[in-house]
Length: 225
Image (cartoon, rainbow, N blue to C red):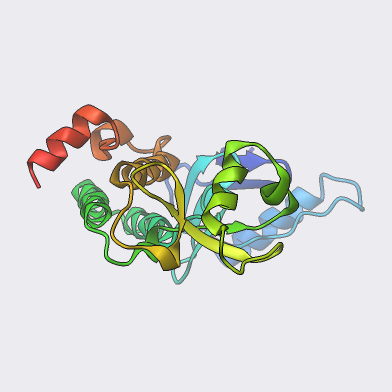
């Protein structure tokens, strides 16, 4: 009836906009909500989650919202608190550029900025992942857990503690406090590229964010250093 565009829909929410992308007045928003709820039984009730001039859908239940003042993100791929600080920072920078509709070249420049940092790390904590010492870490024979167990060997860390680790050149895990300049550059480049894949549904990631962790690309990169 209204001929709106359905921008996004998931389990418990919908997002719509007008065909000509013109804004909804407050009166229109109130009337739409009233009409929508009028089509459902009394115990089913929709509420307005906000009015957003910018909505970027990356995947199911993963999207970026901008109300004109503040950027909000929803979804596990955008809100992973265990992700390395440098990678969260990279995500936030790209999201800001997307919301601002900045030239695409700026996204590439941002990616390359973190490539350079990954190749010349001085503050390894920015590239460390947070891990919790669990029973599995102490007892499991799986590589993921045994690497953490080996990293904390000889330390005072105990079950329940959280530690920050990175990969050394020999592929072993190391505690942040034991950093001496030895780290796996290709691992950091791999993590950065995997993080960039969050945007693959809306950007030509292969063209924008080159996977420098691949041997052929990494060798070229080192020659140009």
